[in-house]
Image (cartoon, rainbow over all chains, first blue to last red; front, top):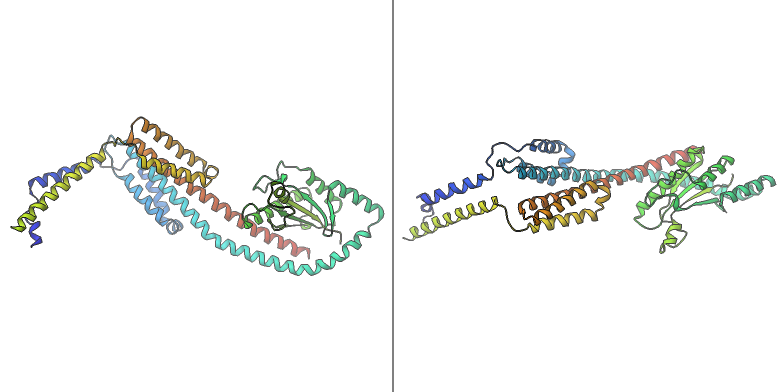
Length: 288
Length: 133
């Protein structure tokens, strides 16, 4: 058998005619010679992304899809097919935008490793410093009660009145004022309503007792990840701090911590319990 | 003898294939009269994905656009404009996919912002505690 003989005689008249017909039909869908109007701007957007090295590495697959979509949009269409051209341009445009967004996502994700390292470094340094301070704190805590007792009678009476006004609880750590979760909207660290009676009272109290250090501790319920809650609790504590600074408290007196859901005061299994756990505790330290 | 037979069979095959190709092309150019079920299903699926990704919050306009296209596609089906319905369904899908992508980008940006803020807060706190000592 000789395979070459299959092609030698040509394909015959009929076949030739059919081929011409089919190619005419194939190009029939795309007769007009120029690219549809509007395709240039999509091409320009795509080129810009392709030339951005971050996008080129982080959205390689999506950029390839977008390239195919843009090439299709650039293909000339017959005069009656304006709707087809518009459709292809729309698809191409959105493909380019998808590539951009996906590229941004991956770029942000790759930056996250670095952010994490920076935060770990900051946290480590903070812990080291905290440990150094712990010794000093332990010593001062022992003498705190004695000092409180040393307040003169009249002073003590006034302080008690202020404490009652503040609805704070006297504990070993100092006066603890609990600000409930009504202070914040769900998931938000912004203080609602701008003013808050409890916070105003607290600011007044701190004005009258300017020698007291204040710890502001944020706590949350256990809904969501530990990391998210830790951040949220810290931000809420920060918001309270900002509020107090705006009301004239010296920022050096205020320390903030975010404990997330590490220190619940009630069960997280009930709505009421969770509400009690979402709080900011303000600890006004006993005078040293 | 055998070669001639094979040659004839081959020619016929080429002819048939070419004609079929021509027919397919003709059909492709003409509007299909069957509803574009697959495109419509993919559009609905993409919109559901977007909604589940919370696109309403992060990419509301894109999600809205996807829904608008899908509605228009359903109307085109009712009017038996199947080619138009197919295009609209595909536009709905790609708009919903963009909604998902933009939602992802917005969430990723929010996470990075918070991470940065957390670090700043720790640095600031340390600086302050250092001053107190």
